[in-house]
Length: 141
Image 1 (cartoon, rainbow, N blue to C red):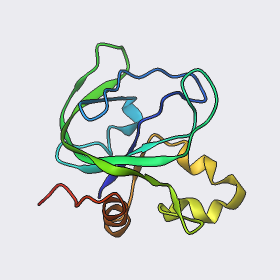
Image 2 (image 1 turned 180 degrees about the vertical axis):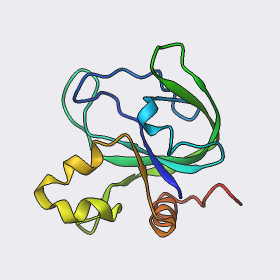
Image 3 (image 1 turned 120 degrees about the vertical axis):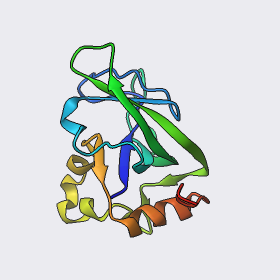
């Protein structure tokens, strides 16, 4: 199943990851069962800005998970990113007032809880819709 990898400028809890957009993704071991070499993903950027303030929540691009290694930081893993393609224009996380990830919809006013999870699986049709909205196709061409 395709993934959504969260690429935040800042986190609510102050976690700092050694992510490099389109190159490297660092994550805690709780996500290891989901992140597998070859998995397709879209990047999601949350609303918190580095240094404070907010920005629009968007999807940034599409890629594929590469090899996985222990991070130099204890208790974390990292994966290389392959075939990354940024979207021509970032894709809003809502279109016509509906979340592109339908798992958030049932939570109503608490939908923000859904987006706190740093790595999420999404159905193939959801993944395709996000990619198409960004002017890209899935990486398995």
